[in-house]
Image (cartoon, rainbow, N blue to C red; front, side, top):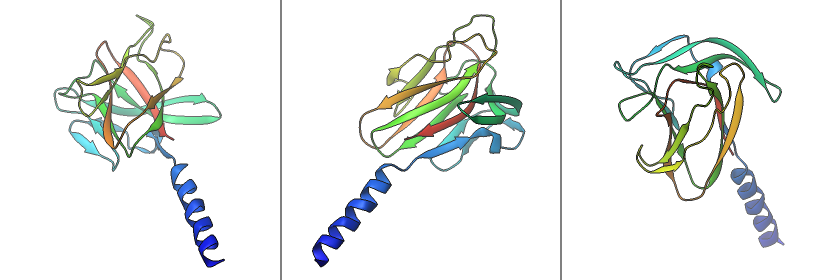
Length: 164
C-alpha cells in the first residue's frame, strides 16, 4: 500500500511538473532603452548600444489578455543585438504574442533558431499589417537548449512569450 501511495505521488508531481508553464508579459518591464544583453532568468533580451531594444507603452488585447507595454525592436536583429533568447528544458510549445512594427510591408518574417542564431528551425510569424497583435506557436522537439527569436527583415514588437 505504501509503495502504491508513493507511486501515485510521484506520478502526480511528474504530471504537474510536465504541465508547468512559463510566461513573460513585457508589460511588467520598466519603460526605457535596453542597450545591453539583459538576463531575466530563463529569458534574455538582446539589446546592445548599436542595436537597442525599447520598452514603451502600447496597449493591445488578444485572447482575453491585455498588454500595456511592448518590447520594441526598431529594426532587424542579428547576433549583434535585437533578439530574445529563451532557455527551454526540452520539448515544448513556444507561443509568441507580437506584431510587425509598421504597415509598410505587411509581413515580418521571424526567425526561431536553436543554440545560436545560425541554426534556424523556422522563419514565419507576424504576417499582419502592423496595426493588430497576433500570436504564433512554435513546436520545439529536443533536449535542453536556448531558443533565439529575431527578424532579419525589419522591426517588430513583442508583448509576451509563453512556454508550455
